[in-house]
Image (cartoon, rainbow, N blue to C red; front, side, top):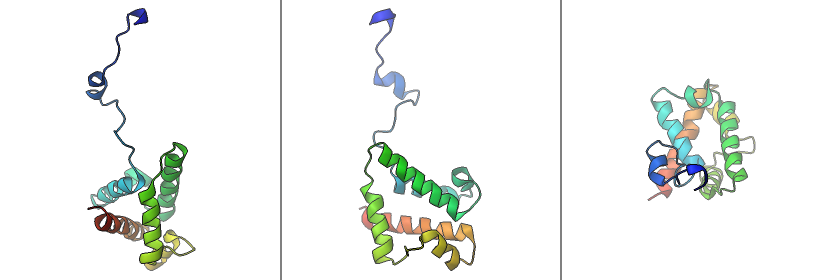
Length: 127
């Protein structure tokens, strides 16, 4: 190679942790990670203070980023349809407003309700 550069092999990058994951981390997988961290008391590392609008912004931003990078997240679309059509838990006003009302204004409980639905959907649809 020109300039005495050595070609990089996968071993030199993988040991340093610089290789991207084999597949992108899709939205529901990341939401499961947030749920796991929330149960361990670490929700703030993902969205700051517990606030349903913060999570809505995170979800919308993450999904938009996937789309912008040409990544189709069909599982998230199926989750959205399941939440709306099967669970009847995605009204026109959006999940955040409904869950916050259902949880008497408790943002953390409303977020937990949403993330529990994510976990339920994954348990039912991934075998």
